[in-house]
Image (cartoon, rainbow, N blue to C red):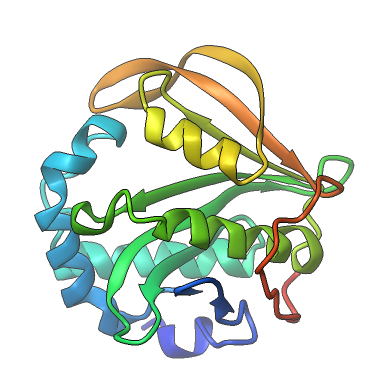
Length: 207
């Protein structure tokens, strides 16, 4: 049996505070809020995500998800986080630094989702802005990459607003909602200017 409360201890990656939001690793107790928000937002998220498994919102699937997260974090391969609103601790969405590459690369890919009731209110921009200093200064990533479909104007505006630079165009880059979709490619480097209002916290995360 996986001891998830131990695997997701704060010293793996501590809570990250931002403007109106905070980020932390998922816990078993997050399942009801996560399930309800994902279910409520399904139609909103479907055009931008891979196909959902038939049991995706089940408790068993959530447990499997957490086990995978635990393995990824302990191996320094990915860092999943949930986004909460300060004050009432409402779950808003999630983001992940995945495909971590070390050695001469020191890079990772950023992905994110926002619940439908909270989209367009600046919460994800606050979350990404809070995460970037941690990605660069705590996880020591030189490069954070992100991709979005050319017709996803809110995501393009988010990335450009967080200091990402558009670098290229990749044909049929990801299979989204069952279709291989072209994507715009963005990246933000460690030496790019930090946006104001972020407060990274040091941790013992793997380097």
